[in-house]
Structures are given as C-alpha cells and as structure tokens.
Image (cartoon, rainbow over all chains, first blue to last red; front, side, top):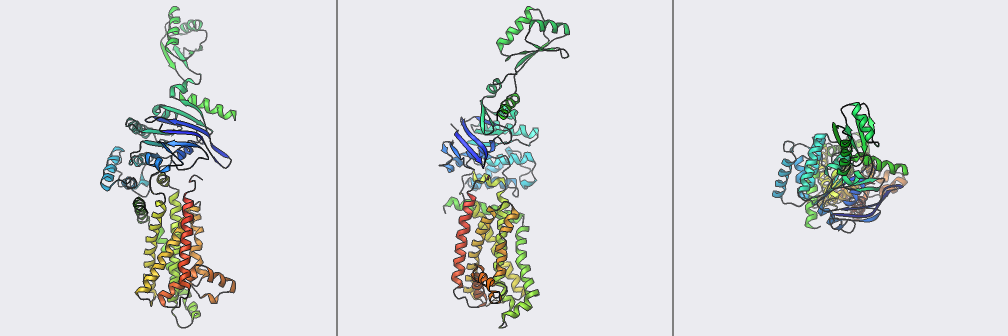
Length: 308
Length: 257
C-alpha cells in the first residue's frame, strides 16, 4: 500500500475536522478525495504529508509511519498544495534550482533537471521572470514542476486545478496522466467531480470529516437511483403507442420522449427493444443515462447534512 | 551540524540574500532609523545633553555605542517582520514537507540577518566618523567590540525570529520587537544613568542594554568597563539561548493553527 490511514481524527478547538478517517491507496494509482469546501481534504493532505499531526489515528505513507519516521515519508513524497508554494521573489528558474539544491542534487544535475522541467511545463520564456508576475496557470505549473525536481514516487495534489481556466485545467490533467503512466502514485483532492471522474482509479467522498462513500466512479454512480433509458419518437401517435406498451415510462409530449427507469444495461435494453419490436413501434433515437458523479455527490453530501 | 544541514542552510541563506537584494527597501528602512537618531541626538540635543557629561568629553563619542546597539535592535525588528511575512508564504509549507534539515529555514534567516546587520553597523560607523566620532580604540579593542556586536546581533536576531514566528501579522511582529529598538532610551545610551529618577535608574542599570553599551563605550573610547564586560557577554548568551529555543519550539507548532 502506498498509503494506509486508520481512524484519523483532528479537531481545532470544538471544531471537528476529521472524525475517524480510514484510507487505503494502492501504489501506481490515482486516488481522489472528493468533497465540498471544509470537508477536511486539505487537513488530510497536511497530516499525510507530515505538515501537521493528527490528534488520533495512525498513518503510513510510502511504508513509513508519519509520526515515528517523518523524514522517511518526506523523502518519498512531493506535495503541491492548494495555495501555490512558489517563491514569488525568485524567478521560475531560481525556484527550480532552489528545489534542486534542497534535494541535494549536484549543480550540473540540478541545472539539467531545471532546464528539462522548464521545457516540459512550457515555462522557458518566463524562466527569468519573477514568479510574482506569473499567471495562475503558470504558477500551478511551476509549483508542480518544483514538486517533480525530487522525482517523488508519491505525489499529493491538493486541489491542483482550483481557479484555473478550462485550458489550463486540461493541460494539468495531461501532466497528471503522464505522471501516472510513469508509475507515480497520486493522491488528489478536488471539489470537481469531473476531475475525479477523469483522473481517478478510486474515489472517496469526504463530508464532515468522514468518508461517506468509496469506490470507482462507476461503483459510486450505481449507488444512487436516477438511471434511465430515453427513447425519442417521430410523432405523438407513436409516442402514445409506446407509452401504452411500456407502462412504467414517464413521457414528455413536447420532446416526444419516454424515460424508462433502469440501469441501461444490455439485458434491460434487449428486453425493451424486444417489446417495442413486438408492438411494431419505430424508435427514432435511444440514449442511456447513468447518474453522473454530481448526482452521487449531492445525494451523498446532502443526506449527511440533513442527518446532522 | 551535519554536512547536509550546512548545505541546506547555505541554500536557504542564498534565498534570503536574494530576497534582500530584490526587495531592499526594508533593510534600508531599518538602517535609516539609527542614522537619523544619531544625527538628531548629536546636532539637535547634543549641545545640552553633552554638557551633562562633564569633563569635556565629546557627545558624539559618548553616543555612538548606544546608536550601534540601536542599529542591531532595528535590524532585529526587520528580521521579525521578514520571517513573519515569509512564514505566510506557501513555500515554507513546502520546505516543511521536504527531507531537509529541519531548522535550516531559521538558520538561513539568522545568517542573512547577521550579514545585513554587520553591513548596517559598518555604514552607521562610517556616518558616525563623518559626524565627528573619534574612537580611541586600538586593533584589539576594535576586535573585541566587533565580537561583542556579533554576539549581540546573534542574540537579537534569534529573539527577532522568535517574535516574528510568534506574531500573527507582520505589523504585530514589528510592534513586539519595539522593545529591542526602544529599550536603549532607558539605558546609558543617551545620557548617564545617574541623571535619571531612582526607579528609572534601577531599570536602566539592570537591563541588558546598559552593560552592553558601557562595554562598547569602554572598548571604543576608553571609559572604565568594570564588570560590565561579563554582564554584557552573559546577557548576549542568555538572550541567544532564549531566542533560539523559543524560535525552534514556535517553528514546531502546528502551522495550520
């Protein structure tokens, strides 16, 4: 396991941030911790990256206990935080050289790695400019590049695309996919479901300091109802016939569609099409709707909130 | 220190020096205060204050040791503000999650402050000489005075770092280090303590600045030192130990508060 955590608890005064968190992350995978603001995502990253200590519970990261051997953990990990951790007064190049020195690379190797990362992250033109003058997307790229100087095998990305425009976000996703292809384990936190869906092998939904669900994107989507097959017909008459044949469907007269509840699996589709065939009804268009992660997220997090 | 600790400290010192070079206004500002103070006291108050000294001693000669201590104090305030604003930057959190020597962030800042302060002291002495400061010190005296100033700088720098880490805002860091800049007023820096009321005189004679200033004055212009020298070195060592221990424990606090 790249990361295991059991019963992590953390509170600030009366405010409980983490309320018994258990995590297991397989090496070489992308694990997304998904949750609204204030769910405890950043606190989790801070504990696992040895920045702060938990009040209770245990965590092992890259084989090392975060409390007993923080130095071992630090050697193995890289952290790119929510608020970009670049030195504003230094140039992009100096920032990377600073990381090379702190990773104890020799001068030549440091220069080499710096040049390579500047090119890879499209920062060559801005290399000699102070980071304070960088745009949001450039700062995030520099931030991640700085994390990569030490070639960590496990990277924490705390909301890496928050506040980025769509183009920068997609560029960041490409970079992350490239890292995963190289065998790096990624622990990602995000409040964007789309991002978790795009990148993660497993997703855990965090709400109010507890995990409310965990699984692959597909498994999570199956957790809640809302899937249906939508059929569209050429005219109102056919729609009428179909509605009679499929009594469980809900109809929309204006759009000439019928929604048949179900998971949209092969069996359901075959049965559905057989019945329409038997009644000699022509279907113009068919589409399968599975609930997206947004549905899952809202269902899971509101349920929790109302229960409180 | 291990070689890695030295390497990390050098790296972070270089970072701090580069900051100073890119953003010099703060360190220049901290230099201006003692220089203006000196000119003010010599040229505006000097005439009447100097007459209280008696014996025809030059007031500027009497004043400079106090101004030098004040320079170190102003520089410590700069250190406090500097490290406080640095701590709010995300990069410090990055350093904390890296496998580097834990306190090199602090030691790098301390060395940078030491360099900054020594530079300031040299400039202040230069201005003092232009103003009429004529020290009677020989080479050994200068060496001893320089040694004491470095000790004092270490003490104040570590206190400044601790103040900076303890404060919530750069403004707070500045105000909490004000005593380092203004305690010299209640000492033998500007006038002999004999001229003060008895309560104030007790404070003035028992606070760390007075023996330090008296020792510097003795070394530079040849007034008697007595046991001030031991007190001066003692105070510096104690303050360094307090500042260093306090700074380390503050740095180990949960950074997320």
